[in-house]
Structure formats: structure tokens, C-alpha cells
Amino acid sequence: MNLRRRSWCEQALTRENRSIDTQVMSGLQNGTAFVGPTSLLAVGGCVTLLRVTGQMMQLTGDLPFVGVTTQAMRKVKVIGLVLIFADVFFRFARSHRLFNCSAIVLGTLPPAMTRGSPAAQKPLDACVSMKVVAGRSFNQGQRAFFFAQAYLGWILGPLALALFTAAVLLFMWNRQFDPDSLAPLGPQGDAS
Image 1: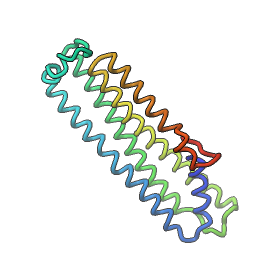
Image 2: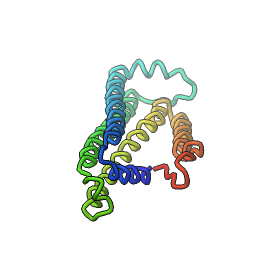
Image 3: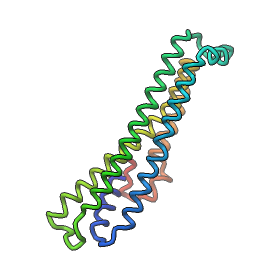
Image 4: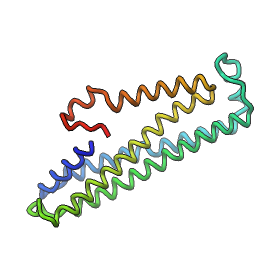
């Protein structure tokens, strides 16, 4: 995708009217603006779990695969989940900010007639770099969200943690390297 980001910026440099580029940037920003606040909802849910740890222990205590833990240990586990979702929020917020900065840098690209000149290269490289970092931050936020699901297994016990983690790893591997997803990108299909 980083190669596609560079290609996009190079194509934008050939256009005098860059309205399509601003629409794409708007879509990227809206995606992060939508997904980011959901992590705050998850933090709120976890804070609620902290208040009802005793009830949670009663609910899961009879399950045969759940290990015996204390109420304090359950609270520590939930606090870990709060920290993960807080990290998710900050990664998405950073991505949103960087996509915003990227849109500004896109707006600084010189006129199309300067394409290939040294004056155009610096803003082009800045635009690409900003998009790459924003995309990386967004992907890290998504991965953290997915691994928070695996972390939920820890509340049930070590076996559940191992199973949940294996399931998330399999899902992530498939998401990252699925041939059907990469085929449309062609020979330069980098999944990063």
C-alpha cells in the first residue's frame, strides 16, 4: 500500500484540479474519526466491568475452563484491557491528525507543470511520508483492537488466552496476506 500511496501522490501532482484527492483524503479522515471513538466506548465498558467484578466472577466462576482468581486479579486484568483500549484511541487519534496533516501537505503540492522538478520533489516526498505514517498508525490501532479481543481470553484463564490469541493471529495473518485481497494490487502488492 505504501507504493500505492506514492503512486497516488505522483498522480495528484499531474492534476491541476485535485478535488478527487481531497475526497479520498476526506474518506480516510472520516474512517479514523468513526473508528477512534469506539475505543472510548470500550474503555467505558471496561470501567463498568471494574465496578461489577464480583458479579463477573460469579458469572464466569462456574465455567469449567475458567481458572480460579481473586477479585483483585480480575480488576488488574480489566485495567490491562482499559490500557489497551486507551492505546487504541490514541493510535486512531494520531492517525486522524496525520491524515489531516497529509491533506494539508497534499494542498501544498506545486502546480502540475512543475512535475519532475526539484521544487516538486520535496512536497511530494512529504506528502507520501505523511500518508505512510498515518496509514501505519491506523493499522496499529486496528491490530490493537483485534488483540484486545485475544486479551479478553485472559479474563477466562490461560487456556482461553492461548486459544483467543491463536484465533486472532490466524485472522490477522489471513487479513494481511490473503491472496484474494492482494491479487488486485498486482505484482507490487505490499500489504503493509
